[in-house]
Image (cartoon, rainbow, N blue to C red):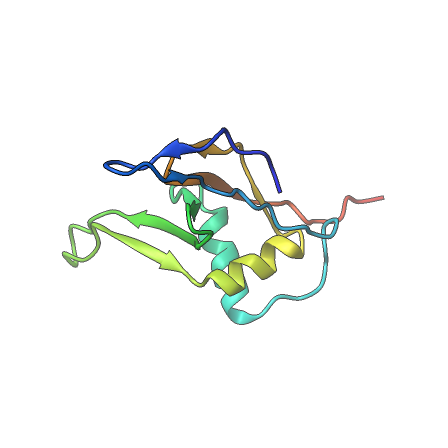
Length: 123
């Protein structure tokens, strides 16, 4: 677990509230095949025009997601899209995705999620 700055007081209360930023342990670059859902998640995370973030809330709840911009042709989008947490955590443990530097505030900690290049270098 990474250290988090000292507790901050909640608004209107005297009870301290902290955002534990637990980093999951992972193996070094796994080359094991991923599920169909995992492959779709890797495509989303690998797209440079779609920044994906992990939000760890003060209670420990984790949520992976990204912002889907409005598509002018279909009129769909302009919303926040949550990704399946279990699948994303499995990708992180397998070393397929990595977390960036944390941005910490009293209620949550946010990490940028990036795909890890798992291609084997040629001999």
